[in-house]
Length: 236
Image (cartoon, rainbow, N blue to C red; front, side, top):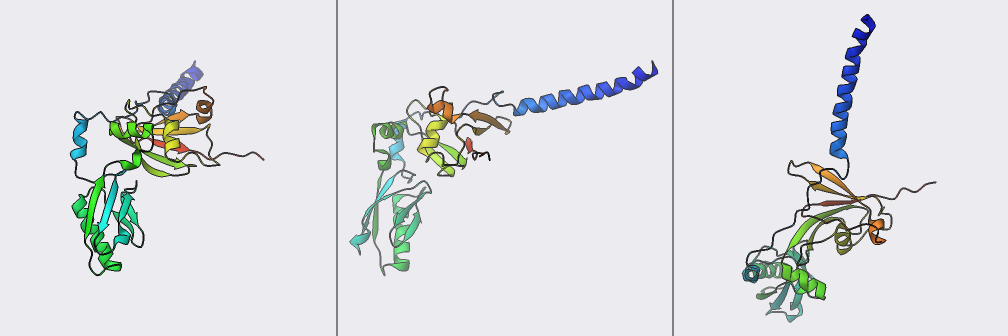
């Protein structure tokens, strides 16, 4: 009787430990209570987007330089928020008006290329996205999501990916749009990290190989998602 009394507390402690471990593991099990992909809502008045006078990524700027016509031309506003002008390099322009961007370019020209510079800037909205019917749809939807690519991808970092009109974009689609998986990436062990309402990151496994073969659906990507592509492990 005395032995059973001494052993009982031990079993109580072990049972409590197993319960705690079980609760913690449930938070890490992929496919649990995963928060839904966050998709920007459609603007109430999309026709008013064109009235915005701020330069955005994907726009093209047409430059006219009075003193030297060699600098004239159309320059794409890149994902980094700048345009690249030969002999000048990168000029940040996003968030600016065409007038303020013109002043910025004038200062850069007068610093290294011209004694005096008079620059006129015209904005051509979203012309970089008008290369195919699918691109036209993305431009018309006016919605983009911010995603992060990390690991064995060809273009790691932050990307602003345009959404189709229905707002549905898969993880595999977003990987292809941003450059694809690199040679040594493991397409079978891709996962995304998605923040929940509590701020914690939830891990969602995505088997790209199965999606390519048509054996699995491409899960939706959401705003702020982090796509992680691990490196292949080669056996010896």
